[in-house]
Image (cartoon, rainbow, N blue to C red; front, side):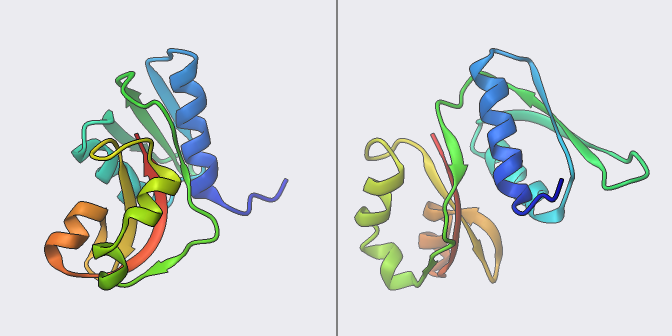
Length: 133
């Protein structure tokens, strides 16, 4: 089986385990992008601790679930957004988030992976990766 989008697979695994009220999720294969997205989700309070497990192949992440995720997923295609687009963001927010001030869009920027609010504060654009609420 060929896996094309590991980030989509990771977020789907988290969402499915969250729906079934599991305490933790096992994400494989691991990657730096998935680790960065997990750090943002942890910083925003959607997931608890996560750890990397080296299994001799691609590695795994063991993620502690807190029951705070209603929906999460990737944004495809990965739209590039400039800082100006972020300022007039309601189009993207309406498309992926349920309401104002609920949830975050996760972007990959030249300053690392961050939420849309952090990107606005730092005045940078980037590529839309995922949403969580």
